[in-house]
Length: 182
Image 1 (cartoon, rainbow, N blue to C red):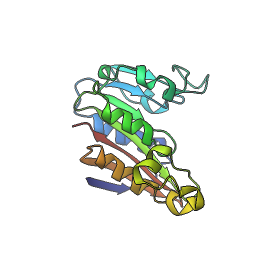
Image 2 (spheres, rainbow, N blue to C red):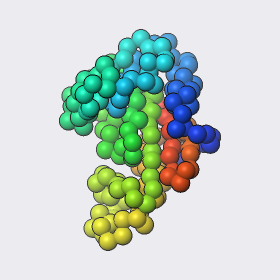
Image 3 (tube, rainbow, N blue to C red):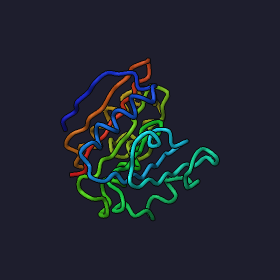
Image 4 (spheres, rainbow, N blue to C red):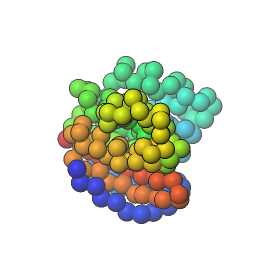
C-alpha cells in the first residue's frame, strides 16, 4: 500500500476541514455519512448535497442519536459517496465492515482518524488479525503503540491500495486521512 504523509497540527478543526475539502474537490455531488458526527462542526463548514450524521451522545448536533456499531449493518451505504469514520482511536471493526460491504460504491471516499500510543487498547478485530489475542493481555503496551502500523497493514489486507494522511506526534501518534474505495 502506498502511504502519503504530510505533518501538520490536526488538533485544529481547520486542518480537518482542509483534508476533507481536498479529497472531495472533484466530486459532482457530496453525499456524506458521518459515523461519529459530534456537533457536525466539520461538515457544517463544507458544502454537501446530502448529510446524515450519527452520534451516540444526545444534544451534540443534528444527528441520529445511537451507537453507530449497533445500526451500521442496517445502513444503506450505496446512498453515500463519502463515509466519515473520524472516531477517536483505531476503528478496525468499522473499516472491515466498510471495505467488505457489497453496497459501498466504487469511488467512495472514506475518512478516518487513527490514534495510538502505549495506553490505547486495541480492538478484538486487530488482535485476531495479527494473531496475538492469546498473549496480548500479558504486555499490551508492547503492541498498543504499534496500533497505527497494524491499522495500515489491516487496510492493505482488505484491499486499500493508497491512503493520504496528515500526521501529528505530540507524543501520541495521530493520523488523519482518507482513502478511496477501488
